[in-house]
Image (cartoon, rainbow, N blue to C red):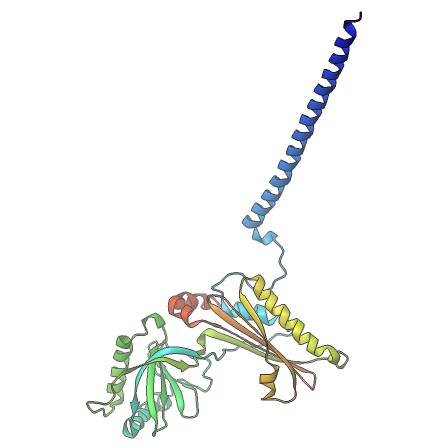
Amino acid sequence: MNNEAPKNGVSKKVSIKNILSVLCIIFLLTTLLFAYLYYSTINDTATNNKENPERVESTNPLPEGDLLNIDELMLSLSKILISEEVRIERGSPLYYLDMFGFPLNYTQSEKLFDFFYEEVIIKEASYHENEHEWFYDTDEWNRFGYGQSTSIYTKSGYACMYDSDFENSFIVCFYAKDLSNNTKENVSLFLENLIKDADLPCQKDECLIQLFEDYPIYFSNYSRSVLYSEKILDDEEFKGEDRIKENAQKISLLFLERKWNSTIEDTTDMEKKWNEDLLIANKVTASNDYLTCDYELKLYNDNLMRHSIECYYHEDALLKYQKEIDSILATN
């Protein structure tokens, strides 16, 4: 009897240890099961969101992507702060493109002026006062207003800037239809035909076609702009300047969410030089590899708030992807 008691005590201790071990294993397995189910649910949700992006709710109205349709971009951008429908027009960014041409003496300029006059005016071909709406892929000459003595003439995919100031006259051209082929060889052939058609009196050392590298020109076909003004209510005047800052911050953050580079600049001091009634001006500049957008907000003493928006494709983007961009814009 004395020997049996210890055996029973040992058996009870072993049983308790076994039970505890089993419970620990069950707890561990249960924990692992719940962890597996949890992470499986997260992964399935992430996978479904990628496969079905429409299920992901987003409050950002700006279109996603890099090489965007500039018309769609401007439409969505203009609706962020402006409740009314706006008119989207061509912008006026300054591009620096390779141009090819030569100076003209008085006789040559007079001759070229008469040629364009006959081709455009007398033949009643297209003449457009608005330089922001070029088209150039036609068999007839078209003329677009550009400056006091300067006009843009287009034909067969080429665009030429002609300054008819007889004392400082010149003509320079570039292949607007395909900037990747805007070479001296291609443009020279076009200019040589123009010299013949216009019957320019060129001596041996005259009418020599030269390269004008990075020539500044307002090539507006690949830009869009919006100008809009609104009155702020009198009872909101005291916080009008805060609204400018908040709205600029809002626009900048939306671009940052789309992985654009975006900065805010206080342009008040600079803009006051042009209008002393200005209270505050903030400018958002956002860009990606293909596009740049400027959104400037101004507030004046008379409670007038002005929105100035302009987006345009970069020169490098046009050199590499002009055909793709033309195809995108043709879908509108």
